[in-house]
Image (cartoon, rainbow, N blue to C red; front, side):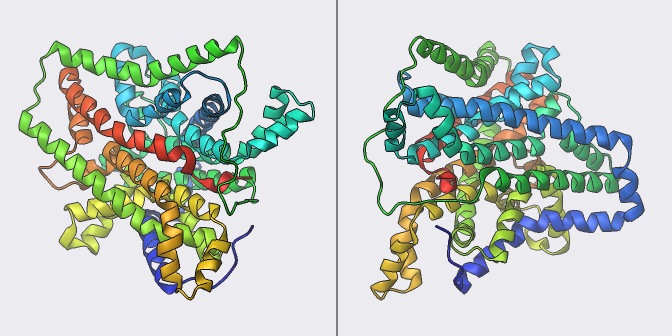
Length: 513
């Protein structure tokens, strides 16, 4: 059922407009900087041969990681939800746990033990491990919404398990796969830490180098614009892959679980594969940092560590709550009122997610110096920048949860004489709370791991776990890196578990066919 084009409430439009304006600050900053550089300079940079190589490498890395993460994440989701895999709930958690390992933390662990892995292949390895949980959560959410009776009817018509999987299940989850692959690809395009450690010259690393050099800031701005253009192609291509149709149910549908497909001898092959995935993506980094920590020699001061830990906790919670609050109206409008504004705002937020943290940080430095001087180099502007960076993470899940609710429920609420706002608070909002909880967890986790934005915007003399880790990694002090890496991963475990619990059934319900 398609959302009806009714007039949207002004209050929701106002909040959504503010959220969109926050998200597009980096885009406006890039447009201004490109204008200052001039058309001749823009064409000179974009038409140079090294930019073509840079674009091919960046896009190639994003595509390869997206496809690999899509294949692995879809397989793990099907194994957990539809096969007779032993202890599926445990494996679900283990597949999602790599969300607790920042890409640069995993990359540093691999490079420290095996320097030769610092290459394009090493970046593919680490970033695939990092993004598989994104696809897994999306596809798992779709599988849990499908009516198991469809599979049973297909089998009653003589279709085998393989035929049911290929002809029925795969077409129904293709939209979840497309959404997960898009998010994974955009993550790769925006990643800085892993590619920097792996010494892979892609857009983000070169842009940061150009900004820090201060010799040619116009080149950095033009390259960032090129990155936005590349990301726009990914964002615009995603609807073509996932299609438009959606369905919803008034009730919860069939209460019983789908029947499990027997794997036979492949059951233990699947267990071995999942075990290897968990060991490489989570076990190896954890064991590496525990080893360094056990050897001693750390120069970390206890007060410094506690201060960074407390700052990380408070900042993560603040950004997560603020992001979900400002994203809720936009997600509701995108689900219920498909106006030009709603569609454009949704795409602008998704596009902003592809920007590297360094560009977001510099855009807010630019705005802070010129318009927000009272909060410049203070925590409020850090929160604003982080919210701009993470809104897209909450938007997909919240919009999907709103779309899953039949509009007839709202109509029934309105028929009782209650106003739209009261119906929203009593009927609509409670139904999306699981998605909101998952979004809070994912945003808090992302904020804790965020690096470039904090490196440039945090108040002088303050640090988070991520910034202190990066400082010690810069001098290759493995023993001092270890406590920060372990604390950062420990902090991220709880949000990852929440995402695994709630996201299993609520991550972007748009994909229901």
